[in-house]
Image 1: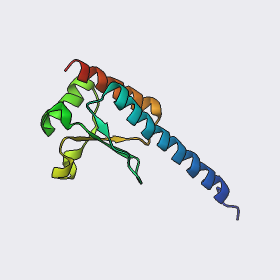
Image 2: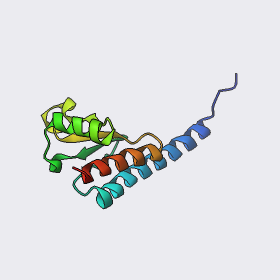
Image 3: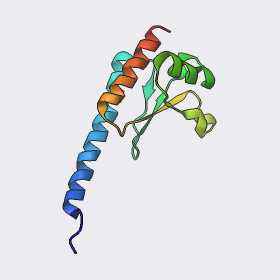
Length: 115
């Protein structure tokens, strides 16, 4: 029987995916550095989830969630769901089209600017 996909094709896809995810992480870091210097994204080593330190905004977790949803129109993952060490952090899934990340960060930028 013939396999549905070849190992070589799978390897190519994995390499392309890793390059794309790396580009998304770089985009997040560069966008924040240029447009949202208050926010400090991490550089994860083995995941597609970017943790963004939003403590400089001076909001508690409930206020940060409300701000993101109501003012920016973006529902980031809440770092506080992962214990006290995650308090004040947002989680952004970078495993999506870059246009989605750009839209979310642009909306967050507008909300922070008007804050």
